[in-house]
Length: 514
Image (cartoon, rainbow, N blue to C red; front, side, top):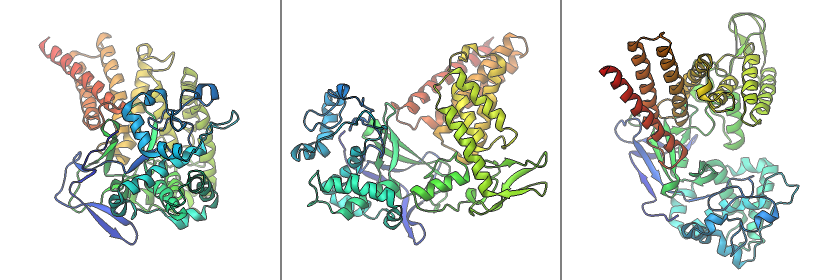
């Protein structure tokens, strides 16, 4: 990959500072429309995630762990992991040589493949991304001082988590200063600062082949958090991993720019736990403070003592809060609710670890039915199960799309609409997740319409109405995914959706001419 100037383009945004938020961004000019670009930025550095397997240091594809297969999957100069394809690609191997290769070769830093009894985590690779940041600092000290050095890294809070801190100290800082012989170039404090900056600010992305990496985008990285974001970021692997930040919805002048540091389809307690553990703060956004999560009941339980009551926590930001029924006098502790939630999450995880199959689909439906008497239909556990079903209906053996009877097509349509109900609240406007569900939704809508017409249940006018509904669904999907890298999974899906939309439009025109 070869970076070209400019590395950062900032449109309409201004950097502000507050004692509570530190540095943050606002829309500094006139009101702007959804999808407008706010920031374009090349990564300061990118590399593998921590606690990952042995993988290629350029394309991040996981490599075989057995020593025989590994013989061909390493750099001929330094011996560190590099897949055969990247070895043969001039641009890719230049990228590797630009960073760690010459250093490892010069200092004879050997890579040790995982032993046969290892559990898939290769601690030796944890140093790669911090090392690339450090080397980028030397190559571009001006950008480091202006954009990266001021980034939050929560040194005190990270030190308090002594187990994680000590692991990073040994596996990264001491490894780089010792075996890699960089002690005269980088202090221990500087290396741990970089580790902290990456932990708090780095974004995870996917290559065009779908493999995970993390990258540091210093300007985009200072966006503040909200559990209902108003910006959408897209990483373009085919453009040197450039990131583009767009307005997710219409924004007013002076409005704070926000994205979510957590998964928006976690419940409040789960988001708070994730943010506290990894980002070192408690979120007090409007969604987090609302027991009903903006009316979705995304964390709501059914009351076990009355028929129609719902169990809501009284203060979502208080770990000792009580949960009370909306109709009767029943109440219980937050500890009891979170324990029940953990038990259900463990059951769900067990089912989700199964291979994609008809059996997994059936087990997912079983859990949905089991939890129906305990959870609100839009509870995050139920929505997670429904997302899994959306993916499986039409794909797994015995449930292929051409085989699905109308009752199961109706089932797929129903669960798609349930997932969209919460996504429209938590990810309004441009949302990749929403676009994916919209694409899944259009299929049963079309097939049910055609089935009804063939059976004589739908007249021609009603068929046209249903097909126009499917066109509208696809149009929204296309209007979201057209901003993705055209070579990525989402970009390709957008092109497929556009083709399906155009075919349906032709079908409707044919009905008009009939």
